[in-house]
Amino acid sequence: MSFGPHLFLALLEGTVTAFVLALTALGLSLVFGVMRIVNVAHGEFFMLGAVLAWVCASLVGSPLGGFLFALIAAPLAVGAIALAADRLVLRRVDYHPESTIVATIGLLYILQQAVLTLYGPDARPVPAPVSFTLQFPWFGYSGYKLVVAAISAALLAATWWLLANTRLGLYMRAAQQDLEMAQAFGVPARRVYAIVFALGAMLAAAAGVLVVPIQQAHYLMGLDPLLLSFIVVILGGLGSVRGTLVAAFVVGISDGVVSVFFSPTLAKIIATLLVAAVLVFRPGGLFGEERA
Amino acid sequence: MSNRALPQVLALHLGVLGLVFLAQFILPPYHHTNVARILVLAVYALGYNVLLGYTGLMSLGHAMFFAAGMYGAGLPVYYFEFGALAALGTGILCGVVVAALFGLVALRTSGVSFLIVSLMFAQAFYLASLYFNEVTLGDQGLILSGKLAPLALGGASIGFHEPALKYNGALLVFAVCLLGTLALRLSPIGRVLIAIRENEERTRLLGYDSFRYKLLSLVVSGALAAAAGATYALLFSYVGSTFASILYSIYPLLWSLLGGIGTILGPLVGTAFMFYLVDVASGWTSAYLLVVGVALVVLILWFPRGILGTVRAKWLPWLP
Image (spheres, rainbow over the protein chains, first blue to last red):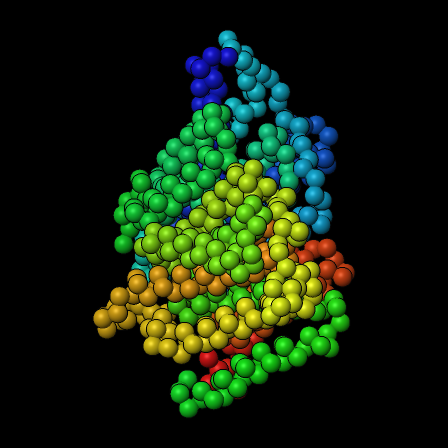
């Protein structure tokens, strides 16, 4: 395969990665923006989504049925876990930034170990719900990956619509801008926080469900999406939804291209250092609006 | 704490060191090795606590300093047959250099951003230790036994496999670091660091260059972490990239929280307590990470001051 088609394949792979990454990072970004906390356990919600997708697939016989079931059930289950975590832990430390980080690190290990104990240390594959191949002149491309991109795009659009057009979205934006003022106008802050935390977790879980037919379900799979989401959220400007989406595509596509041509480990090292540098020299992010 | 409490403070810390010294004559072999390991890891926690407890900066990247010390000591021993003392020196030097470079960049941020930046730098360091696996052998690691010459001590030479050397070597490093931390805490510099923890804005207003003090604190913290890493490599003759992973950045946070952040002896108490908690737990379950997770959540919810922090609040207000 010559350079052109190779680059095209890399771009295609990168775009699919970018959609899934956008979904995961949007969850983290919402939680950070509205609640001003860093959820270190975010990657574990992604992992739980993937593992639950495997469970659903083994409960339901047909791949398509299992996939659709998982797409609904897994985010709901993970959302319930997130609600419980919010109620039992985060609310009690009053969303104090550093306490929350310690608590979510604890949550990370609890979830990881629970999955290791119940599900085991193996990486398990889940069959793709659809299996058609898109034939290009130079190579065939898995149709399922395009389905992933399409569903991600739909979920991103739905979240955007929720933020822009519903009362809940209005509450969320108000709480993000000025919590005290929002409360003075009757925004139920605690309920909004709980919903935002669950919503963030559900987005990550949905991304996990989508990814699992491409990448096997494993109890340690949460770390990479967590770090990539951090990178995206920082590049996009902490708390900015638009910035997060733009950054997810920059990171996803460049990650796809770089990993095709260079060693993935080297790519990650360089990306990590670059992002740390961005955070240090442009605390508002590359695309983000400067926030006070 | 007032200066009148100084005799008590010295008596307490020297007494603890004396007790640990005497304990080696009665401990059964299994616990003998455990205590040596705990002492080395407690040095790591001591270093972490200088930054978190006495300066108020929470880092999630200390594994990079620990691992810098470990590789800084282990690689020269493995490839150039350095002696133990020279290796300890190069290890600490590496930690100081890494901490200073990291600090110059990362201390421009604070709070949550500092946390994320430290996590990312440490992850880059970890990935680098895997990437250069021709030198570091990555996850598999390097075994130093056989490479390390026995320590010559007043005519006699003692091999590094001797339990007595492990124990007393660990204790010596721990004692130096503990007393050094105590001296730092009681010095004028220590007071400025605590002032920064309490209110950085006001400290700056009083004319202190808070960036320089924070950098100093970070370098001391990194040097202690590196000393622990180097000692660990030499005494337990293993160097591996596992020690650079995120879990090893979280351990000293857990130990410091458990023992009581901002107390000198807290890191030792926390490390020992957690070590034996995991040790006992692994007797009936392999899920030791569950213990780590639950301990973190329980501490932050019901016990944020830790063991010695609570003791200080209730009974011993002079505890530094």
